[in-house]
Image 1 (spheres, rainbow, N blue to C red):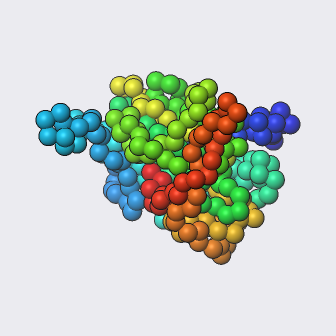
Image 2: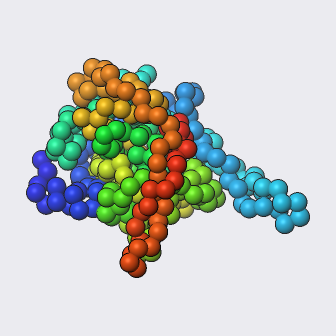
Image 3: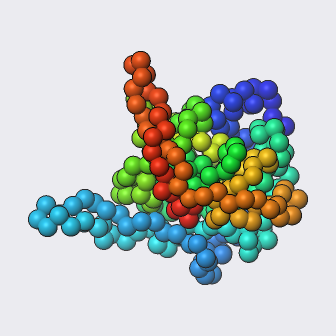
Length: 293
Ligand SMILES: O=C(O)CCC(=O)C(=O)O
């Protein structure tokens, strides 16, 4: 049950952590389940990230790749497990998530995606981004439910949120530092906007709006995973979403027919107006949903 203070915080910041929404026993079950799946095979959409580029060779100008073993190769992120794994499907449609999402959105959502990040010791994070850049929900936006399967802090690469960025338009992306991020695009932040680390216990769920700028830094520990189970939802009055997220499900599990948003679309760049940074929608986004990695 959310309080008025929870709802106010969500409206103000664009995100909310609900503590202990899943019990220690449930979280232990999910950890074991996904580790067993990971160890027993590979699945469509597994993704270990872009190569780590260190820069350009001073001699030849060629890109220099980091040849150190990458921990993500052994633990690639899994995607859309709910399409073939009943445990994931049940979690995505869980009553506690449905009730919280409905309270935050004001309307019951449609479910469109699951993802499992293993983030083993030494793994890169994911550069700051906005989910709506990929999902292209029309009208409205998306919402994520991010369940911590391990305790998360700055050392093992907890989530980082830029409070208030849910009011921003979709920004055009720039290149990310692939020594720190397993994806290669990010968004520029105006002066004064800073990511805030989200310290969470296993079982806590972070809910956040699709315009929200968020991401995570590398796991710098030598012995702690930072696993998370993520559901992506879209507002229940949306008419279109990018093709990659079809079929969308009602929260009772039935399929809802939605249109497919086109690739591309407009995106914004920061400009200064009257001494303050504002977003001007002058760019064209080339994002493909499959790049939401
Ligand atoms: O878990 C992470 O490190 C990043 C997850 C994320 O950015 C997302 O689900 O959109």
